[in-house]
Image (cartoon, rainbow, N blue to C red; front, side, top):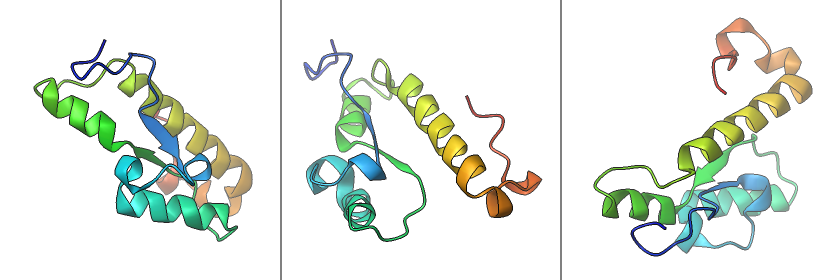
Length: 103
């Protein structure tokens, strides 16, 4: 159990594509606005937000990642990498944009 009482299987990472309606309190202003833009069909690069709860928990635990956070971040990076390589190979598939070391 986290210091704040949040269960360890809590979702600490939310993609822009799934974040609409979650709110500024959880995603922060920029994350919430990008999630809303994504839900409207505007072109938003595939990315994710680490929730404000995760940062609060990190602070409460004396700068220790909440249980499961690092694994969720790695999974989010793998997901973003897959989207970029598959959908945007012509632009992002070049070596200078290679995210192959993540995951």
